[in-house]
Length: 623
Image 1 (cartoon, rainbow, N blue to C red):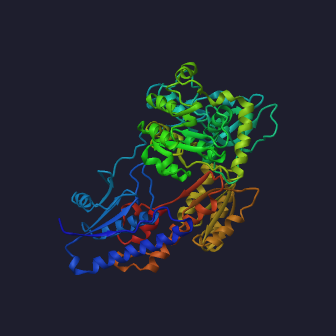
Image 2 (tube, rainbow, N blue to C red):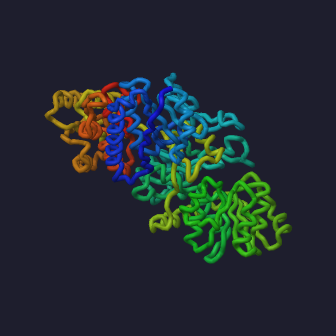
Image 3 (cartoon, rainbow, N blue to C red):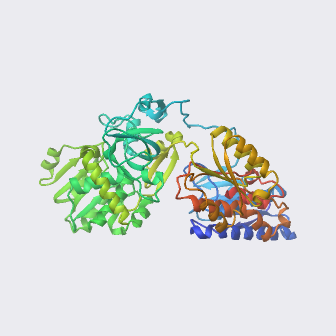
């Protein structure tokens, strides 16, 4: 194997939104120049160039890309590899990975051209037949929801028809088009057959749009965006008591809204109604990096309560982000928290424990309770007798609870109180990871392994909202024209805005408009350089209110091909602009809208790295 020259790409973790575009251009041009210098040096003729990135590629759904500029670099270097066979190697480390030259040498020794090092595993790129794997398929036609057809295994999760939702909605209830639904540990226990008693249907919270209002419902109307307690929420349609929902605050996405109800209501009910916490008291929150834990910490700090929390050590940074110092946190994987927190409180203990652990962790937590302390149990796998607890810990209170016991009136009141705290900036939604419900088995499995922080949300398959306007960039080009015809013919879209550099002057634009109009669509063609943020913003702002923007399809792109040695920063920038700049601008300008469609076309050149298309490949990996 030839000797190697290692080129480490500067890491750009989670850059500020305004710097993403500039950073992609900057890093891509810098790598281009380094590769060109290496190729031009005769003394490097017998060496291999190893380009090292961090977090630039994904190896699975639980391994997201964290460095967008470096992702674009992979497209560029793939083209350089195709032009210079067996001379360049791409290696991606974990986003927080340390550059270990020994491990790197071992990976390079595999003689693979592209690889991702994750822990001790080296993963390589390979072509394989596409398979949806665990992906679920909704039944054709009709309404459905996610249920478990075989308890004890997550393989039993399936979509089943629910024809009852075709009946008129009952009095006092509202019917909701579910857009997103929160996943809770209760759902996992339910699916695995481990929940004590009747857990009811899967799914208990959601956000979406009201489609029908039953008799006797005041204050809500069809079209309202709402969030709240929604039984059987893992499906496109669900019914609920109108007292269980409130309107979604302006600026919130449906995924964000669906993450709020259960965790914040559970924490609020446990701390306020059951524990009766007052300023100056102390609280121990177990699983503080989980959904209810993070909500409880926010509420407790607002109430003026001293907070202690446990979490696995890998999640302590989450606790720090919520304002806890190292003296107020401990591991949830050992019993060390008992002595640690007794010492921190000079042996007094804490006034309230909000618990979700089991076994000896419950016993240790009871020993941490102060005199006349209150133990609030929200777990389901180790519920104790209040009588026995009081016998062993005189003066202590023990209360296991289910949120639904609060009743619809109180739940409605608590939701209103929580929304006021969100509006005042006292509370903020948790970090959210959203996944299509068709990958439910995968998400349930992840929650069962406690890999996540914050909240997991399942989103429902979307259909194109034909009442609004769909914008197609590059709309008069070959790909844009094909997409426009498909949306009109196959999806019934009736309002199209086609944006292209030449607008109505583009070749074939008039004929395309005439064809689409004959199919029943209203079509507007505008001239716009979509890589110019101000120009793009003006086009989007001009979309009429009676047919608001509901979809974006980005097909725009240009070519300026040339082998790696002939490319310049200017040629890179010209090709990156419609793919990188425009994609990012579209994302930023529409992220507060409830789009039913956001599609970005990317060429296979980004994955295969075609010769002579380094700049185009870089842009297409980003997009």
